[in-house]
Image (cartoon, rainbow, N blue to C red):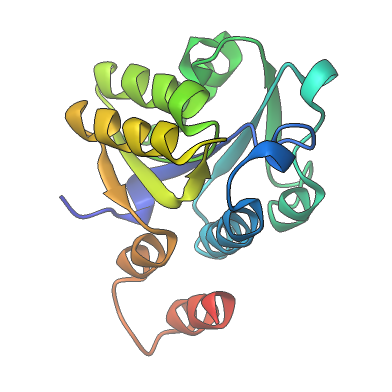
Length: 183
């Protein structure tokens, strides 16, 4: 299945100030996620962010808030459910977006990211899990989450592969924008 921007949105799950410091390879995760989000917005792919128990875990990381142009362009949803799809406001946004392909990135891979992936797949959406934009505190938890997501039918990809698949053609202004973002 090809991913097309007209039918795609993105959820950035819980990349928060008090959670990210404990995530493996957090610097690379943040840099990759920043590039993904910047590219998606350049391609007019809608994005939302979730913040799990914001009172305790803080807000979305400042680097990502800037990339997502929060709150002007991208809205953040506070949640307490592990699965973002079990939050009624988020479910309403997704349902009314009309999008069927949902790009997922964030933390922790084996908890909120995985449970959201499972619920979205079960609800008839096609999840595209961005392996180089998800993280956990341990490698075994991240690896286990990716395996389970595959078993549930999610597409596993990387941020560069997704951005170029959405662009589809070299030599366009969109292609040049994406090329500048990933360099």
